[in-house]
Length: 498
Image 1 (tube, rainbow, N blue to C red):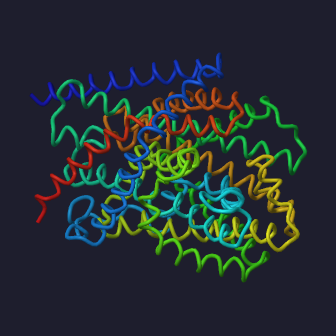
Image 2 (cartoon, rainbow, N blue to C red):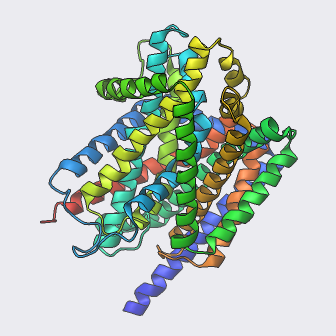
Image 3 (tube, helix red, strand yellow):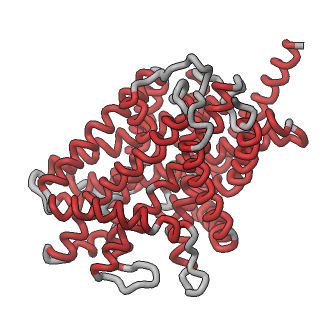
């Protein structure tokens, strides 16, 4: 009987792997051969979801935030993700570094300067370029990168970690669904394949934006012309690095890269804070905390139905929320993998609150410096942001001493973040297609690394951040319904705990 079950699991595993590889490979080749056609398909699908299901996605993501708060401070906070005697595998610092690097490290660097400036120039329903617009810009930015984003990650990770480490099921998207509802009509196969596609597409879109930023930085620092050839060379080098890292295992490659990421990021952050307009940055940070938390309930349910602002909402807030959903299975499974032995309360506070506060400080420093230059430093900085968003960070450094050194450090940081994200994503997809193996085979990681690089190359040929965003959120649309089933299974199961 046991051998029969093992054979069934292997058969299911092979099917998920085969279907996922065929779909991802076909789309990757499509993007390289006909990038315009792939672009139109991705934009069409995401455009429909953003306009027709805006209420659904906002309510869903706000629900995850409410659930995270309940899990942290409710009756289940003492439960360990594992056996009662289990203790964490990684130190708290390394744990936070890995989850932050996998979650949104590269995204913070890309949008840290640019996004507050965009909202300052054109806030929804307000006059731009005013002190009120600057204040609202920080609230909106923190909404996009704060508690909602990390709550999505926390819920995705909590469900997988609880079933995997406490209930002993494989670390798969389908495990909670199988445990509670069974696998009728191919539901588990479908859930796992959708999870793989969400991870791969989300990773390809995010890596595309990172490569475009590295290319822009090379142009600003070393005057290298921004061409498709340069983009492909960056992607090739990045792929080589993360494939090498993928062969070293979780406790070496990803852990070491994540610690390097955090060290460089904190160093640059401290330079911006103490060399830049220090008082202004710290005042923005403190003010942003008050503004964000005081307006959190209002902003969590705000869709502007009485004004013609659906284009703004779909282009910013909803795009971000669905983007985090796209990264949910990737970051969720990865965070679950490194969180064994922590209590639900410790896990939730560590995954939701601490990264949110760091993100707010990051935007106060980088976005606040940009706002200071535009409002009190003679202006002109917004033109750099509007001209090319990928150059915004390097344009900011020109207002600082040692700008060349800062730009080189930023380039290194972006590149290492990309390698870490790609390495983590490859690790997770390999787990998902090897029946939840916590240490998947190297050959499998190499296969998925090449496929992810192909998809990224296809998206790169479009040269558009908008297309990269659309690519990143395409897989999240069907995955959101799988996630609802996971949460229902989790809530029904955890009620049996003492």
